[in-house]
Length: 454
Picture 1 (cartoon, helix red, strand yellow):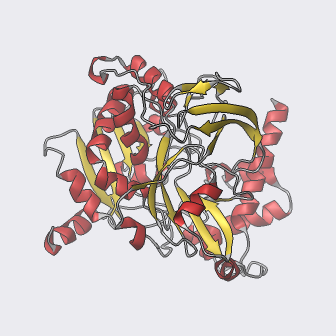
Picture 2 (cartoon, helix red, strand yellow):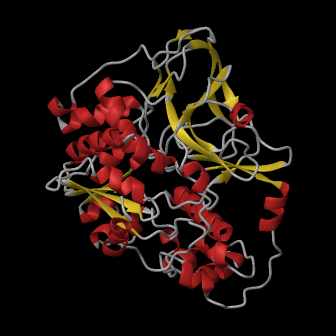
Picture 3 (cartoon, one colour):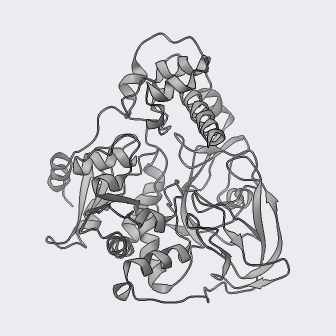
């Protein structure tokens, strides 16, 4: 595509939201590399809790042999999904093991048969075109699909529109605004037809008549690739949005693409919209017609200490230790983060496995961590956090209330619930105040208080 066409895309569709920040991207290396596949680890550790909601319930027992793709856990309720064997092997144990969030969780330990071909032999093909909405939703739950952007909300539950509501638009999030991460970018370039197939399935399941794929304008090659596969009169269109963090946040992207505002405390279906991540829908477009489960995903592996950065297909349950051995890391590795640097979680153990919600593995050295560590000073009332907050909150005021433990006022008068912990406020704070941590703790305490009252 020539420069004139590229400029036209950027100028005509440069939509965005108010506030936000522009952190350095660090995407150049991995965005240009094709997706590769990592080998199987000798043992895979498959946590039963890989989604928001109820954990899955194990259907296997120690000593049992399983085939790659075979269901090994069923949904533990409506807000839960099935799990499938990422490899052919032997169930060795079901025990508590480390997780990215900290607490140990019940985990299926699978010994991989190294001599096996590891073909997916378990499937139940279906024709989405002949299925009703309710049949599609059940099949999606059986596939084990959750939000692959990191939220891990069960996909079938997101596509299920509550009675009394109607959705006309499916918003597809292809922004990938976190630094370093390029998983979605590569999926849009290498799996565009699978993505479009998944969008059509999701539209039918949710009852939407149109879909808008929002892509940041630093991914013009992905925009052009998707547009080349869509007819001009199609119900699916691609729209470029301004490159800015956190452009991919659901409420912000909905407003940028449609002008609709999700009410405080409300949901996207309140304004006739359902949203999903491109990685999730690309998997939907592949797995559902084949009747297979989610057993692997694409993960960005990057950071200053990674010797061979890129985007890799990794079996669910692969330990981080094995992943880092395969890509190579430098000796001064100090910190490993799952997800992006703004909203990701630092892990305390390399025995932590890759799960469905892991979009990135970032590795930093001692010098990088030291550069980010800074002394904290009192608030200087500069207002930078207010200017940066995409939800138009006052993080400085909220943090002062948090220090006084006045959590109720934070929620009732200063809209604490609207914070989705994007980290913009802490990023711009010249005093180095850990604003996000203050707000996160306050939200957790209020949730616990409400549960006790209930």
